[in-house]
Length: 113
Ligand SMILES: [Zn+2]
Image (tube, rainbow, N blue to C red):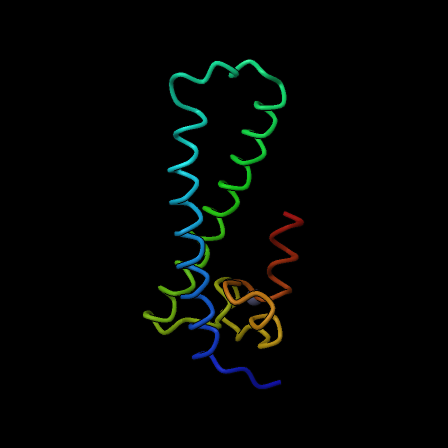
């Protein structure tokens, strides 16, 4: 299966922009919700919503870090190479998960460890 790294790079750059925007928006609205003057801070629903949003934010930040690592790997010319075994990562896997840094074998081993 052929996959163009150039296309993957464009996808990663688009994803990075989208995530940065998302995180920025959260920071703006999050400050309003979490900041001073919130008289409903004790409300269980609010706390639940805030926890949910926070976990979404943390997820976005984690993915953004992975996307940035992947983009750095383009610069270093190591994109598409498994970080552990130095074998090329299956193009089908990269297409599904452009910021993967491990081949499927190594990923499964990492998850078991
Ligand atoms: Zn590997």
